[in-house]
Image 1 (cartoon, rainbow, N blue to C red):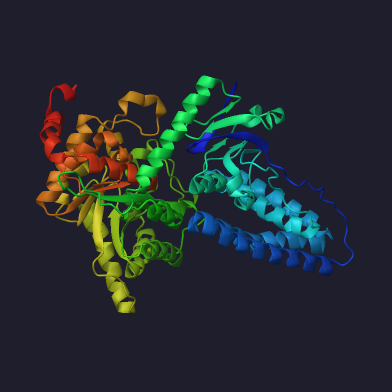
Image 2 (cartoon, rainbow, N blue to C red):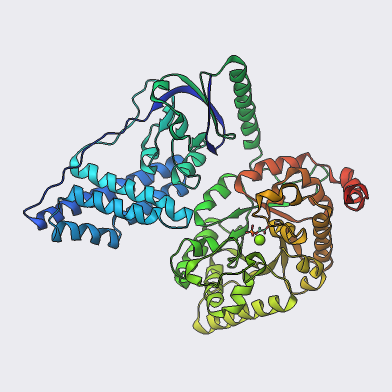
Length: 559
Ligand code: PEP
Ligand code: MG
């Protein structure tokens, strides 16, 4: 038995024969052309054909894996016609008289290198996209067709790396799992594997040898382990795990459409956390009741300059429209600390987690804040919007932020631009100061959402980024839980709702606690919605409340 360790990026256990992806190899010829204009036209024809093919792939992806997967190919269409990319190719053909295949190859290498050198992991992963788009144009130019699977039975597919277009073109009925040498968890291939529910492991390097082809492998996407020729005990153990997961999935599927209601009839809203419009598909397919946290800073992180009001408006509007009247809480820009953006030109800080971040930046840079608040209010006409401010410590900050909302509403009214009158304004409770002042803060807003990732960090003075702090960073610490109870009581005294949008919301060990203290909403990653619903439906709050509340104050738990 050979055991190989990689990184699991899509969960599930799969078993089958190993098959190495056959990629059509073509050598790119380089030569000097005589008629540059004819060569340029040849490129433009191939480019148009590629855009057409990508459109067809987008439709195929939409049918198989939803809008998020389709968007990837729509982005590839834009990339194929990107002006900088096209100009670079044009220069090589028209100025250097290079043939089109070679010009596309050189440009792809140059752009991929540029993306790979960027600091941001998301941008680095775009190197694979530009190569993918370019190889499509090259295969159209050379007439060489792309690779595929030639196997009569379903297989575990191994490859050095898989381009997204290769992934979507594969015959899914033949693929039980993916294993790749390279790749990143945020690559689109990993995203597609997750959306299609196929177990996938990346980054196994050169451990997977060509001589293993055809031998039986078992991949475990939750542990990242690949086993070739498993011994009987391992095989039995992994098959049992596979069966358990199948049953679990089946059972969770049946919970779709059911209420998040405890045995004794207490309801709680289960919403989702998202990073952008692409994630809405996952919210809807997991039956999320709304969006409790849209981390808007990802829009800023994906741009290389300040995103304009229109750009933001389109993104917010898309999420609100796609959610079709379900509530969407959009958090205003939360950068600083671990999320730095070059074009903000923020001075380096000794202690960025306690520095200029989130609402502080917005209040210090009103022009940036103003653009976002305008985009948000314009988008409010397209759904049910909540606006939430992060990293609040004082009442005056909230008052100042609300003034910006009033200013924007007055401007939009004067300009005749429609917006919703019922936009809820809320704040994140993620500093001890905000928790302690929550009685007073509750008078200013319509809701609270507890950011337990930061609330734990600041309450316990424990850097959430520092893996070495291990047991010291403990979100179950009674100090954190007591603060949550206090916030909840203060919110309810003032008649406003309170949610949790930090990772703790999905922690099933605390579901009874959250129900007992009366949390109104839990916002979690889309995949956590159904397991959480199951836990809620199994709970009898009246039977556990007294013990749970007693435990919060008990000496034993204060140790
Ligand atoms: C939190 O702090 O719990 C939170 C939800 O915000 P973020 O993780 O984006 O800081
Ligand atoms: Mg936070």
